[in-house]
Image 1 (cartoon, one colour):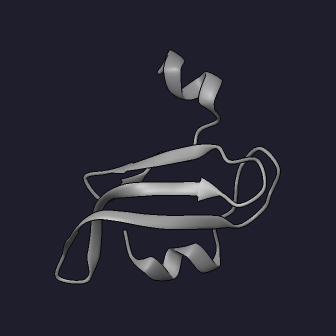
Image 2 (cartoon, one colour; image 1 turned 45 degrees about the horizontal axis):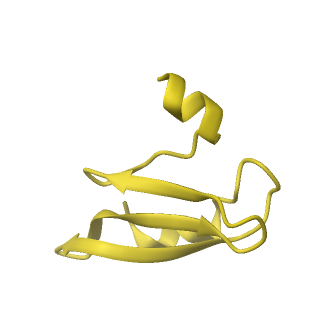
Length: 62
């Protein structure tokens, strides 16, 4: 995931901004980390460079 993606993504629950916490980076790409909503506090994982922006109930079912 590129950090520029933060300019266009938002929390799927309440449409507020997401805050990025990077765990692993490779050549400018975010490989793993967390996107956290600045309003509701819901956290969305980034694994293998792909942010999982499914709502929590759908994420657990998948």
